[in-house]
Length: 167
Image (cartoon, rainbow, N blue to C red; front, side, top):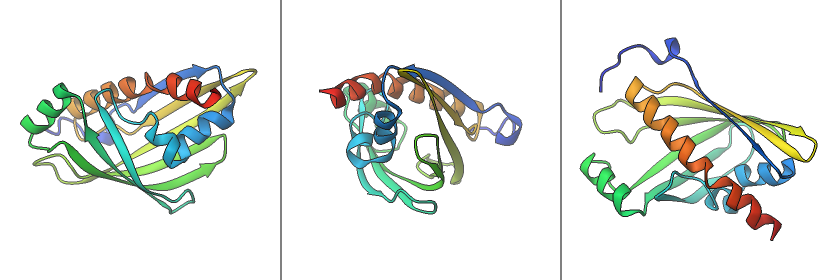
């Protein structure tokens, strides 16, 4: 991978979605083991949460596991294996308003580990919630594009997780 520009000089990833759900439901899907495991990860992936200590300085640790045939093949060809440990630290927590996690990206072959911030903001609007996700740019343009695609993919799973909570 080439470092065409430094991450600080590139535009962060910004994704906005609106959901017809109480903010409490959306918050729980982001901040509990069962919640995250119900939707987190792009299509073809799932996670197993090992630690979720929801406090500033608390740890978030999970395995991201490829389960789809196409994803398994891609991960193996890229030399990444089908599962990798993901680690983050909670940096900001304002219940039902803001959640910021600092991740360590250390699973890319040939790339020195680096940090990546993810900020999620919740804006209740009547019966719905507008959610804004801001993610630091990654180590290069290719990784930033792939991360954006991953975020877009995993967010397609969130409406089903919200619907399941309502029974």
